Structures are given as structure tokens and as C-alpha cells.
Image 1 (cartoon, one colour):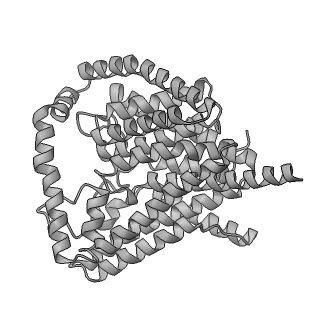
Image 2 (cartoon, rainbow, N blue to C red; image 1 turned 135 degrees about the vertical axis):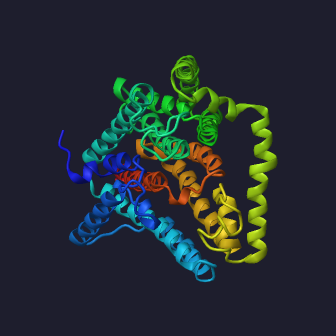
Image 3 (tube, rainbow, N blue to C red; image 1 turned 180 degrees about the horizontal axis):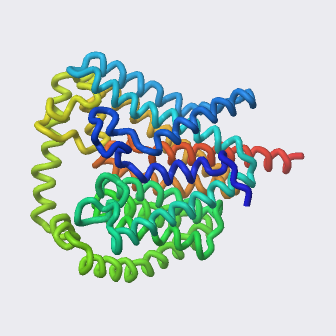
Length: 414
């Protein structure tokens, strides 16, 4: 199997994105503590895509990405009026860098032949499975990466990052296998199973709620579909989920007995007092902080990075939707709604050409994206590298599916 830089771009960037601890060990302070291995690879991807665009005299910049430029503009505008504009502009830079990396990855993927594109996706699935297996083995036996006792954090700074990362990549891998863009055999099936086990071990509620929400929407979409094949897939998926339950329970019980701090973390996360405290305390604090920020600057918000220590005593707002309202105001939240609405609409339109595997991926992606949107109510996903990877992969597959649909339609007419 020939593996060029372009073929390896997706799996390499996805793998590197799993290592979120700062390269300097947090000794430098400031923005330097946000620099990780994946950022250097991202620079290489951006440079390579520019050279590629020049050599081919073509550079893809889809309308969905153009809409996001408006949101970046809103972020910059709110930053100019923020109490700490430097902090706000740095956060804009972080999101903008992820945006640029996604465009670069998109163009690299679209430059590949159909055969090389399939190789890239196949390598990506196996890479994600190997990464999850490594995290689980380290979690149980070596503990080289898990800095704090409790749930699986691995190479991430905390379980929250681990859960968010795994949730997005499970959605991508799941859709690739269900659409048969990547062959379903022992290795690829194991990759998905290991990823599912890894996210359970994070004990991250928002990530698991998003995952199970996506799977629920998927089953619902398949069962109400007018296509018999979709109904069969839904029944098969339901059966596989039932088979996963005893395996997950067995592994989790083993973890409760062997991993330090997991039993305490699990009890702290699922008891009724914690859930009550979340609703009346943490969630209420986030809502009150958002209201306070809107009272100060309703149209443009207080600026990214200008909540913790200013609007709240210590923490930032833990929700994409509330955070956008607070930091970019009604204007930014409205543009974000337009952006995500466009994303969802592009997936819905794909049902018109769902006769090929590329389009089927996009159709299956819709319910998984709805599940992810539930989990994003607890985290600001726009600065997550995995979100921009999801964007690049989904848009690339959508474009290729549309190309194939036009080609086959023209062939039939001829």
C-alpha cells in the first residue's frame, strides 16, 4: 500500500490531535501553553495545501467555510470592544487556526485520487482504533499518561478533552463503516469497538450523552426510512449495541476494581445529588453569567476569553451556545446558527443523491451530528481540532458524492 504525505494527512493529524498537553510541560505560560504537536503538523498541512493549490491552479473554499468567515469577523469586532482585547484576539487566533487547518485538510483530501482517498480513510480508521487501544492499555496497566486518578484521560489534559475527541471520531468512523466507504471487516470493526470502550472509560457524561443521542437518532432515521436497506441497517445496529452492553459492563467493572479513583469518580458523576447540584448550581451559574454578559454588551458580547475572572469568578462558560451568546452577542450567535444550519442543510440535501457510498456517509452523518450538538451544549467545540477534522472530512465526502452523482446521471442520460 503506497502511503504518501497527502494520504497520511488525515490519519496523522487526527492522531497528533490526541496529544493535547503542552510541549513545554506548561513551563512557558501564556499562549505557549496551548501549543501542541498537532499545531506544527497543521502548519505543514497549510503550507502543503497552498503549494498544491498553486500547482493545480485550484483551491476549494466552499460556501459553508465562507459563512464561518463572518463569524470570525464578529469575534474580531467583539474583541475590539472587550475589556481585554489581547486575550480575545488570541482566542480568535486559536479558532481561526483550526479553521485554516480544516480548509487545508479539505483541499488535500480533494486532491487525492479515488483510490488514494479510500486509502486515507482506511488508514484513519485503523489509526483511531490503534490510538484508542493504546489509551486503554496505558490506562489499565502502565499509567504513563493518565495524570490524575479516575476516568481515562490518557494523552489529553483531562477526561473532558478525551471524551469530546473520542465522541467526534467515533461518529466519523461509525459513518465510514455504515456507508461502506471503509470496508467492514475484523480490524475496522475492532477499531470502532475499542473507540466505544474508550469513551465509556472516560466517564464523561456529556460525551456519552452525545454519542448515545447520535445512535438513537441514527436508529430512528433508519427505522422510519422508506428504504428497506436502511431498516435492515437499523436492526443490525440495534443488535450490535445490545452485544456491546455486556462487554462494556464487564470492562467497566474490571476498571472499577483495578483503576485508582474510578469508583469515586463514577459515584460522584451519577448520584442524584450531583445531578441536582448541576441543574441548580453549575448550569444556573452558566445561565446567569450569559445573562450578565448580554446585559453589558447584547449585540457583540464581551469578547472571547473575557468571561473567566471578569463575568464569573474563575471558570469560563461551559457551553458552545451560552458561550457564543456571552462572548459574541446576538450577532455572533445568529451567524453561528446560520453556519450550523448550513451544515445540517448540506447533509439533508445529500439524500437526493444517496445512491453512492459517499452520499450515504453524509446521510448517516446527520443523526450523529445531532447527537454531537447535544454534547456541545457543555463545551465550546469551535476551538476543538476534532471539530475541524469532522468539517473537512464531511465536506470533502459531500463534494465527491456530488461529483459522482453528476457523473453517473450524465452517463445514464447519454
